Image (cartoon, rainbow, N blue to C red; front, side):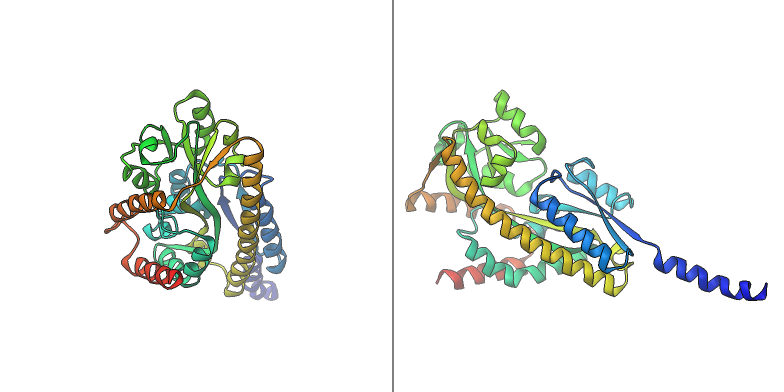
Length: 328
């Protein structure tokens, strides 16, 4: 009897130590996409390497609601994390939009050079706001797809342009061009193109095909509007409750998965461009003078996004300095 009494505390400790921690993660990505395939592969590796101590459970296809709803569910502990775009993650930290500023980047090589310096600073910004970010991946440049030919600021003014609901950056970009955009949830875009509520929407080339928007539009403006970035953010309280080794495993496996996701996204976007052309979508190039005009609009938009609730001056300075170095 005495032996059982003295063993009890140790048995209890052993039971707690081996109890699996389930990290529930929401995402808008549907099952079957590259994103979900890679994340499930990472989750499987994490479960194996942590000897079943950590399980990542995904809720795909937006079943947990929009980003605002998801953040509320994280706050009350119903979820522990989510995949966010830069615009969505701005509710966590405005620095999340650092890569998605309108007309800021001209090529993926510029993105790569900036990310090498800014990613660590960005992770620190998320941590300060209460989130660990084991994965950051670029989804590619967003381009304007439209029913009618939009080739300059004047034709853009006549368009009924969609922006993601709550995406302050996208709204600022179009308002700088004197356009009042129409905010809608992404799930409503296809139907809205069909009914004529909107006649223009920005997306990556692969995204336009994945969401079937390409079947409703006829034109693509061949000008990078902004860069789409995705983050996997996990509530820091849940993340810090794990052992150091288990946190390291998550960082390694999710980080590796996001590298594969980004590599796949770049290949998919190139293939999608060819597919769009093959299906009759007219891709309109922009001359140097037209590009300068668009970049001026982008500069005005970025000015309107600065301030207390904009990207921090420290990050903006690093971006500007790095771009100057690359372009010289």
